[in-house]
Length: 376
Image (cartoon, rainbow, N blue to C red; front, side):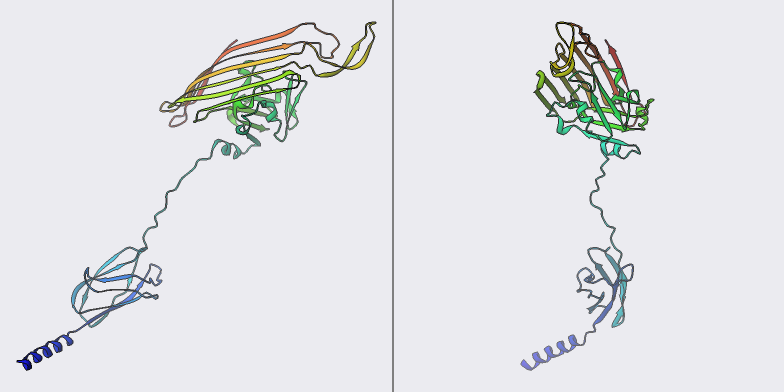
């Protein structure tokens, strides 16, 4: 019985050792013919597997003949599933793998902000933002005077005449705009020299040629002051006191309810202007001499209040608002231009009351515009 068992086992071993094996080999390359290393090769979903070497060569053995499936996979390439027929003990199967399309990460396209757009214009233009100046009571003229090529001259203290020149050109050759609207359409109290810089978001100074939306008969250039238009609520308050009993107050605040906002701007200035000047001083006997004296009866005060109610970024408008303003000046008149003839207690008062309506729509619409109502 033992002899029979050993004989059966021996015969089974001989049969197994005599079973035929089939060898499949080849080379894996990419679309340009370069070898693809470390590609995973699977023979049918549950058969033997292997990897290609550094030169792209592979080989895999199987004991089954007939039609079978080869699966080639690598992370950066498309998976390839090929059916082959195994009939010879050794066969060659080469393959080219296709690279997967590269997936781009999220691309964020940022539109240039307004300042970059202006600086990219083919014009000589300087832009100054007022963010760092809002905690100060600096006047608009003080800020503009810091721009190269711009010269601001003031004949005296607060409230005196101010002249602007751009690259040597002055007077009517330099025009002023606020949000693209000629400044003369506002009240006479809207003096660019006394309005606080905190009222505005930036100053655009065009030297020479001006853009078409500021089309005007100017030779020297233009100064366009842009009102504040912010998405976040804010509140700014500044007050300063200086020589000759000079006081400057500026306030600005905004509160929003969704797309609706309420903006409030206000300023007030006052100065006694009792600084020293050189003048002809009269003696009691009628004779005169050149001396230095203090000015008298030369006070100046002005103010403006401007609330604004509007909407932003709604379906029917990019921005639409109505604002009202009241402003006034009070200026003592001391003497004539040569300081020879005193005027006594003469003074000049002006006051204005106005309203401004503006509508702006540029998205999906070619129309935009503004309306201006001015009452004095």
